[in-house]
Length: 295
Image (tube, rainbow, N blue to C red; front, side):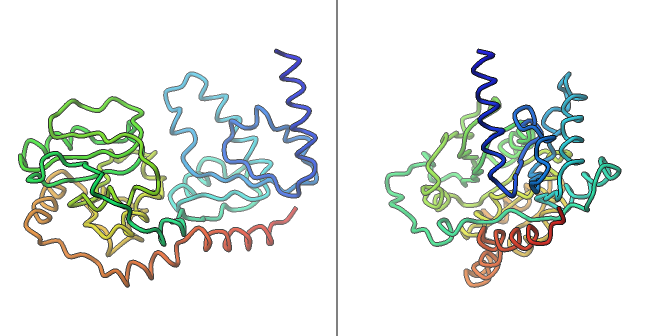
C-alpha cells in the first residue's frame, strides 16, 4: 500500500510541473500536493467556504488550521466566494497573505438559464394539493433550521415542506415534511414549478454567513416567491427575495404567499440579473484576475 501511495505521489508531482497555474480548492489537498515543489507555478487558493467552520469540533482542528496557513502563505492569489468570507480570511490570516483576497461570487449555469421545463406530470412532490408547498432545493445539512420549520407547521396547519436534495443529517419525522431525495439537475425546474414558494430556512451561524448560495440564483430563475434568512450576502439578491430575521417574519411571509400578497419580480428583470451572474461571466472575471497575478 505504501509503495502504491508513493507511486501515486510521484505521478502527481510530475504531472503538476506541466501546468502554469495550480488551482487548489481545499487545504486538505496539501496532503497530496507538495507546495515546496511548485516554485515556478502560480498557485490559486479558491476559498469557496469557511473551511475551518466545517471542522469546528474536530480534534485535529489545529492541524487543519496549519494546512490552511501553509496554503495562504504560498498562494499567489486567494479567491473567495463572498465578501464575508473575504473579511474572515483577512481577519484570520492577514499576516500570512501576500495579496488581499478577491471576491468572485457564485453564479448560474447557462444550461439552467436556457433549459426547458420537462414534463412535470410525472413529478408528484405534493401528495396533498390543498397544502401550501414550501420547497427547499439543495443539500440537507446541519444548517437546516428544523426547529423553525416545525414551528411553522404548528402555526400554519395548511402548509408543508418539500425537501429536494441529498440528506446529510437526520430530518425530523413529520407528516407534512416530505423528502424527495436527490434528483437530476435538469429536473430542478420541473420540481420548482410544483412549489408555492422556494425557501432557504437556515440557522444563521458563521458557516452560513460565509456562503453565497448557488441555489438563490437558481431560485430566481424559477420565478417563484423566495423566502430566505437575512444576512449580508443576501442583500445583492434584492428585490428578488423576501428576507426574514426571525420566525414571526417567516410565518408572516408564508401567510402572504397563501393569500397571494407576495409580489413577484418580472421575468425580464430576473433574466437581466441572471445574465450578469452566469458562470461565463465569472470565468471572464477569473481570467482577468489570473492575468494580473504576480508570480
